[in-house]
Length: 129
Image (cartoon, rainbow, N blue to C red; front, side, top):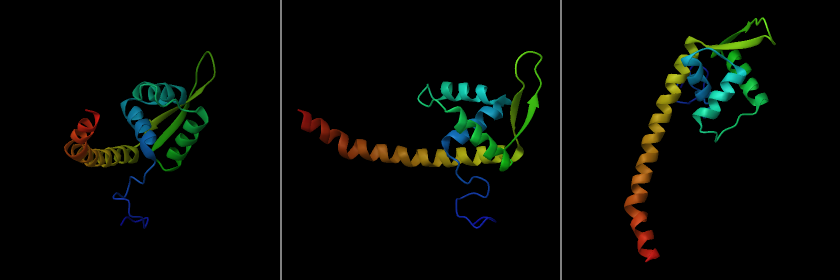
């Protein structure tokens, strides 16, 4: 159990979902602004996830409140200024722990797929014949 009284396997990673992990991954590679993050999310997910701008900006604000990211305004000579987000040390810890959780879940999924292949896949082929 962590200091916050929750049992989530980690004192840093408290959920936040796959999209939050993907955002942290993007920011780990380089600081980015909101629109750039949304474009990267589309690329990473092969356009299976097309983020709503409002949802991404809300997530980024919440991540900033939790000290996972920081932001500062970048002044531009032409066009509107933009807020650039950078991952923090806490954000890096959350990213690492979140990926560790994904890896452990992947092992479980692989085990279930193997079970399926062993017990059901051949039976379905028999039914088709």
